[in-house]
Amino acid sequence: MTRRVTLLSGHYGSGKTNIAVNLALRLRETCDRVAVADLDIVNPYFRTKDSDADFAHAGIRLISSAFANSNLDLPAMPQDLYAVTDDRSLHVIVDVGGDDRGALALGRLAPALLAENDYEMLFVINRFRPLTRDAVSTAEVKNEIEAACGIPFTGIVNNSNLGAETTAETVLSSLSYGEEVAALTGLPVVFTSAETSLCEALWGKVPNLLPLHLQKKITDRFRRDSE
Amino acid sequence: MSEKVLMKGNEAIAEAAIIAGCRHYFGYPITPQTEIAAYMAKKMPKIGGTFLQAESEIAAINMVYGVSSAGLRVMTSSSSPGVSLKGEGLSYLAGADLPALIVNVQRGGPGLGGIQPSQSDYFQATRGGGHGDYHMIVLAPASVQEMAELTVKGFELADTYRMTSMILADGTMGQMMEPVALDDLRVNPMPAKPWATTGTGMKRPHNIVNSLFLQPEELEKFNFERYERYARIEETEALAEEYLMDDAEIAVAAFGIAARVSKNAIDEARKMGIKVGLIRPITLWPFPKAVFRKAADHVKSMISVELSMGQMIEDVRLAAECRVPVSLCNRAGGMIPSPDQVLAAIVSAAKGGH
Image 1: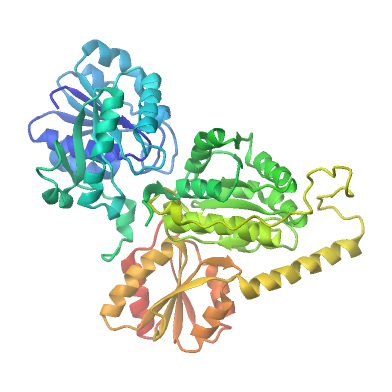
Image 2: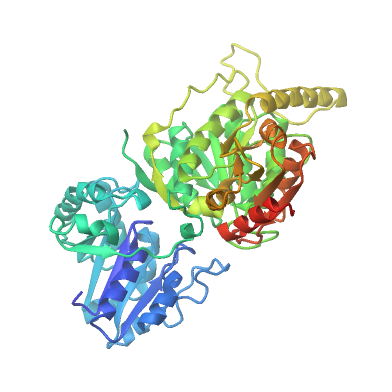
């Protein structure tokens, strides 16, 4: 993450928000002024706002709609959205909504981001999502997103997982998928991500491994140890 | 073993419907079920199906009526306020004996309410929802896998009994992501529909699909016939999961997300030496009365855990024939009971309190 702005986009449910939270906390270790910007206009649930306590603790600014996680299901942009492009001393992780519909919101920032040219845009992929099971359908999503927001991707995050049933084998079995998407799109796999507890079995076997702490989710409320 | 995929509950419903042979979807967006429509919008054009975002929920349910009359598998989905709008159509479907699948991913009410999960449409679903004497088959999934399985079952039961099936889920079930084995879904051949309006080919008298009857005697006859069918369904189709009920002295009754919370609490209570089990109705209509009746013979009390002000509790009391006290443990308005809250209710019941 050598660029000032990191944009995370991809198919609905591919894990963008969780990766955004993790990348921000990681970036804060080396950077003083870090912000997370929530541009999701698609999903009223599972937002970066779920992690606002963690951000406050780490000294990370959250740029988020006042209505995120409320009962007001409004596709609203944050009122301080332009800090992403106006304040060039800020390092920003931008969590974009799913698919082309979500990426549409990014179009408003596209001219300034492209003019400054200090961004990277990461394509988050998961082979176990039903509509991105192979490289061809995954590449289609990439093209749709780029057409919607007008910003070309610069890299891939392979976040292939099966939720609570993910094993090290799940991650290893998806490496070839990541490479196929890379070959088809001409983009490098910048990270392959896996939940922290799986990483011990994956170090050395997975290039650019990104350990992920799972964001607190609604499922925590009823999860049993045996599940 | 087939490879699993990671799906939202809403997506699992949509994909399972396609696997079940549904090629016609009509809907109108509303949180927290919009992913069903979004998934259908992406998939239906690719497989020669119809996705149509209607101008309203009322329009969508009447389109369902039309396709069902033509003998095809058809569905619509919505969330609480939108299902209220469909009420008239549900009654017309019942009056015309038409099979269809309706999905309600419930949110907090009444009114516009909120977008957080709820189970407060239990009365609406199990008592019909619209006007007149009728029932729907009501299925209550408690996992994303079950969202898929009960969708297939819903279509099959609807066709078998010529009536509407409803998936009564809640916002949590719709939004949560879990691994699903879609390849494990089994779909039986669709029964013949000699009543459908598919064209006579000049070989038979034309079929009429209608809910209007000019003579009250005739309308009464159809009502009695329909209730004989409902009685057969109550005898044969009621489903429940029983968890640790064999030696239970307290029975927790809960469906959907409330059942998952309750299992957590029951495991904790068992560690404390409290003999408690769970009865999870999978069909809310027909209500699994026999299971509760049997449990009432050996438990001292029952607790109904609900995301509502207490709706299923009435069926629990009726099924237990008031032989044991039934208490309520609930949250409402989009809130979910915590395992600790359910555990406290179990501990209180174990001490003899209600």
